[in-house]
Each structure stands twice: as C-alpha cells, then as structure tokens.
Image 1 (cartoon, rainbow, N blue to C red):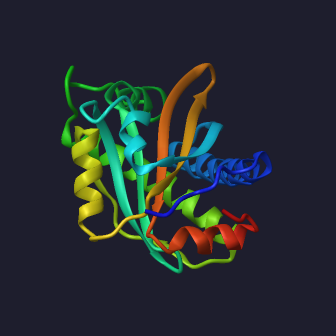
Image 2: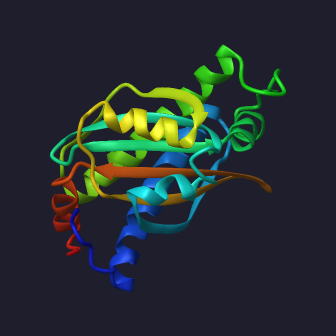
Image 3: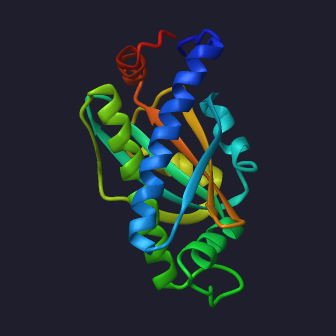
Length: 205
C-alpha cells in the first residue's frame, strides 16, 4: 500500500477549491433541472484512507442511498454520491418538491428522481474537475442502490478489480432557502490515477 505524506494546508485548499468549483457547477445544473434556486456549500474536503470511507458516512452497517458511477479516461476511478435515507427524503421533499410516500424506503419514481439528481451532480462535478485539470474524464451510466454502506462500497469497487488506497472526500450541503440537505462525494481514483490528478492540479503528494 502506498504511503501518503500528510498534505500541506495549501494543498488541501487546492482540493477544497476544486470541490467548490464542482459544487457551483452542480448547483447550477440542479437549479436548471428543478427551476428553483439551489446553492451548494463545501464545508470540508480531505483525503481519507479507504478503510475510513464507511466511517465517514456513519459506519459500514449504516443504511445509505448511493449513486455509483465509474470514471473513465485519463484518471479512471470510482465515484460515489452518498446520502443518508433522511437526507435523500429531504432532497426529494425540499429541493424536488416530492412528498415521499413510504415511511421506509422509496417508490420506483422517487429512486429514479434520486438517480437523476445524483447523475447530474456527479457529472457536473467531474466536468468541472476535467475543465480545471484539462484531463479527459467521462462518467458511465450511474447505478443507484440502497443498502449498508460497507456492502455498497465493496460491491462497486470489486466490479473493477482494482482500487486506490485513498478517496477524495467532499462534504456538501444543499441549500434551498433555510432548508439544508447533506450529501457526500467520494472520488476513488485507480492506483495510478491520483498521481496524474495531483500533478495536473500542481499538487504533489
């Protein structure tokens, strides 16, 4: 396993700025989709070891809603957009104007809406990251799952037989007026992709 040196404060600032730019693009795309103002904040960005990803969303047994997609191109990897069940219902209710019909779980239409929102958000983020780094990055068709965080992460990553040791964790908050919904992105580049990404950003690891 590759050893990562702690990143300097300015390096984390670069990563946070990337997250802010991506969030801004994603908020614009979501506003256009929903025809209402949506703001996104990025309160924190950090690198987390792979083992710590589940802990970042409440633990491996925490039931979450996740949109997963594969990133293809010059920096292949995996991307997850993860929401708690409560946040997913809040996203539908407060931003999409949909009253959830089931106390536990979601209807097919609600899952379809969440998948589309997640697709737009992840696609907007990747597009802004690609513009900033001048690297070719293309998302695959997304898949949505609701299960324990550990099961979802393992299944998504094992599909491709290789994975990086660390993830870029981007904590986000969606704001619609005073309503607030939390979501978390995890970009997990393949083993050689982090070096390419950091080099393009002018950040050494």
